[in-house]
Length: 78
Image (cartoon, rainbow, N blue to C red; front, side, top):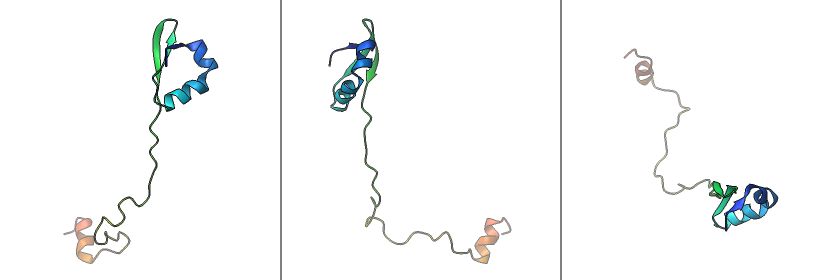
């Protein structure tokens, strides 16, 4: 896409955003001097369970009480 002025950008912002999302290079200028490039932000879909089936064994259970020896070491008494 050719360079557009700020005034044109204000009036055609929706079209410029669509052009940026389509991968076009959108440059906004103040007069004849380019000052801003409009770029799309990558939209990565968040996925739950990406590592499902890849981890082997159970992880630690942080809610089980420590045994007396580990507790003493944790509290600096060992």
